[in-house]
Image (cartoon, rainbow, N blue to C red; front, side, top):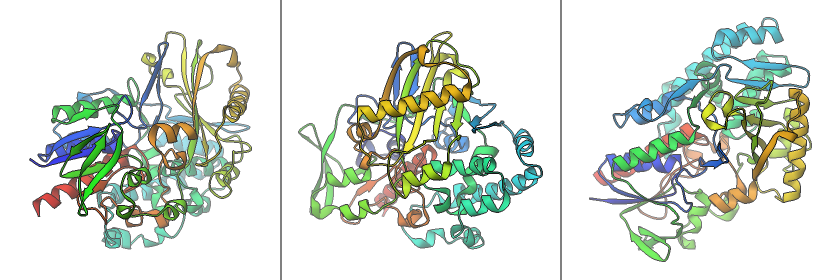
Length: 486
């Protein structure tokens, strides 16, 4: 039996481990932290439960397909609720509520801009076609060759790789609130809408067409489900086991070193940060130079606050976006001229609004996120300064006092991403999906310098986000399985 070692235990690593175990490999996971999940870990404190990483459950079909591949269903492991409303957007002078179906979303668009619902229907129809092509065809290719992008469907849409989301949205919609609403989902892909190919409008179908869901107990329930499935398949998981070196002999991987011991394997897959993974190799075996990494466009980092409130909050939903400041300016301060934002947009998540299990009775679990450029200076003073900015704006826009209801607060920022996840420049979401960083133009799943060494996760194919990470794990397992059969 061939043995595979997987570094890290985030979504892509767990996915790869399950597929490799199913294909007959002996699989062991080595995770540096004390719990599995990578960036999708959990904080439980004083009866409050926080997802400290991903908090949006989009593209339910991808999760369904993953578990179906093992003869399972998501409902074997966790309970899903569709959120209604999906989320709320706060502007300076109004709020916009996104319902759980196109009919209610169209009504809301009409309220803001007469005649916009017809444009929206056409836009989402196109987005649905792109979703079908992206998810069922393009995304399932391993990014080894430019020809993978050339299909009958993509050739007919080649112009959509050279136009941007921003151009497509602004051609159809004039009201800035609607523009922001339609441009926001691509922030999950980690790039400015003006730099993201319009083909990626399939994220708008994921949003409006498929809806926003919540696993009861939080996103960590998916990690627990994948861990359980991996163990059912025979995967051995070692936590508190950082990897200090990837072992290579005569250009072929032979295993890893963890806690001073060599662990031998036929294949190694790293789901840890790609840049960090290459530093575990001797210099001559690294594919990409420091200059290569320095010149890439990264998805944002984040300043996060996890707050327990001793009362129920008013005028909020489960997911809330605060777009009461200049969207474009904040984007420039992330991508064009990296600096701490002068007037940040932010996101607030209160899972206890729909899921009572995530906070004590008559209390609220609050998770606040400010997107920032990776690599910024991160100090306690800056964190406190932005905490005050966010709390003041939140109180003003939701018309309530909340600072006096705070039981505790914890923060997480650039330094923590580096320290806990070995994240390059403390990025939160990996490499941005710009045209020059799509598919085969991303760092490769397979090492070009070390035989039987592979990579998975958000810095490689297909890209950032939880569903793409599940797919990344499948792609890398498929590549390894084909190698063995040769």
